[in-house]
Image 1 (spheres, helix red, strand yellow):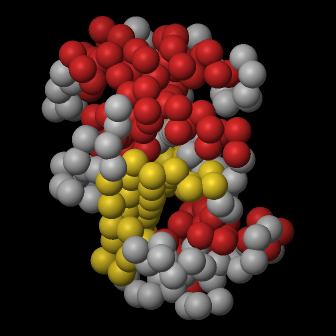
Image 2: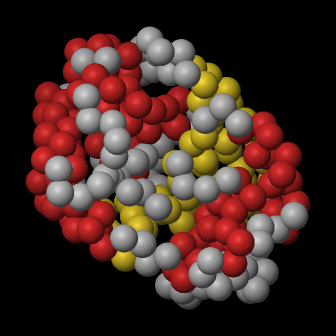
Length: 238
């Protein structure tokens, strides 16, 4: 997917990109490739693959949930900025907080935000378990997102404690989403969530399976969650 096809594909979804937004995506790609030579950000570096498998894939969350409102968004384990930075480019109204545990990735994100002149984007060097117990951020966000971070049983413990009651947790997943949701059923309930939709679709051109899982936060998360760093991964709620 080249830049032209990317723009046309989003237009079909009623996302109309300005010249400035197109340039932001272009600069994003250039900086990603430049930094990837010294910091391991992604195994995908071919331009058409980045536009399809990173940029379009990230923005696909907006096909099933409206990002048009003035929302606070927390992106857990964003790595090179996916999905939050592509969403922020498309929907400048978003107030974004990005959390990642690796300082090298944080450095890249800070450089990227400056390069793209993005406003209302904060980057935090932290583990999800730690920030989820931080009173400043706990149950603070309208929306929490995560892409390619962990299985749903683990990811729910990372994300739902940060989501305010009445807010939404969106997980961007691949082909095993239905199986993961079965395993995560108890975790989602215990953490105060309710599954609303598992939207299955395929990426254009290559037809690889994707899923946008939407979970509403219906009640407060018990203070014992998230547990200490490393515990959710080693001992998921089940």
